[in-house]
Length: 148
Image (cartoon, rainbow, N blue to C red; front, side):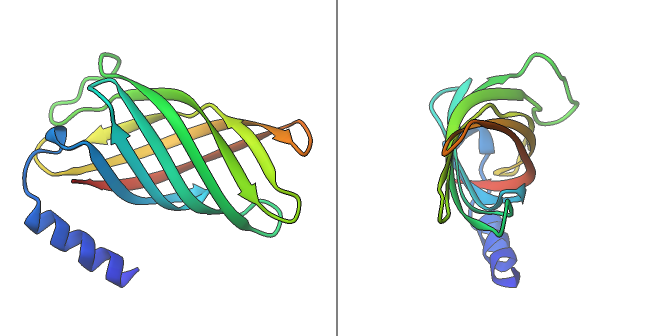
């Protein structure tokens, strides 16, 4: 974790331009799951959101997830930066002895700093697992990304 924080600090020093002009963010997510988070913007409203992480469901396993998301910048106004509400649809796979495949519907807030290439997000994710059996789950987390 110490190495990650040092690398993050170096990225902030080197990369001092506005985060709104960047289209790829990389960071961490803590929660269910916990791991690496990435986001690639397509335009001002839409983005792809990915994670390669550890799921703590059952005895814990590798999880990969991907979502297509929409941002709504009009619901919450803040004095500095931007705070869009986002929602989307995607999928996840948990690699275990009996792999799980599910449909994700993320909903969250994504604070985008005005001058720093950083965003902080929090999300809640209803999940409908469809393989090996149909059942409802919840996920969610808190994360931070640095934009390149």
